[in-house]
Image (tube, rainbow, N blue to C red; front, side):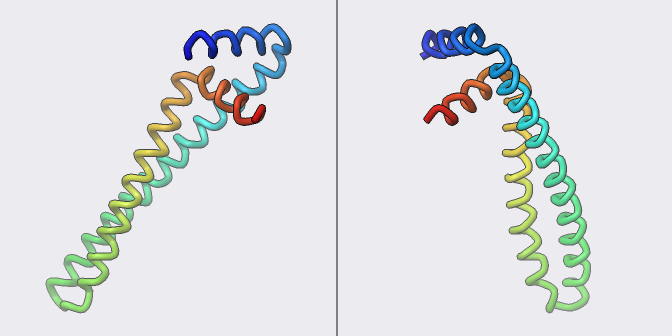
Length: 110
């Protein structure tokens, strides 16, 4: 599989260096976008944790806020998972943009 990927890279580089440069630039932009989304979702996770703490204090005073704790915990866990996935995908793309460029190329060929 690695041999095929190397052959595809060499073919594209030799046939059209401009096309390859565009795909690599698109890979970088995709990685940066994913990292930004991961950071944004991480910030939302922190805000959700603060909301859950607020509802926990209110629950001690009045039992009607228990649903807020439950919904906040589920939302926080979901946001944390999405944040980690986006951030790790973005970091992976930024570490190896050539692989993502190959993937973009193959998706556009099919």
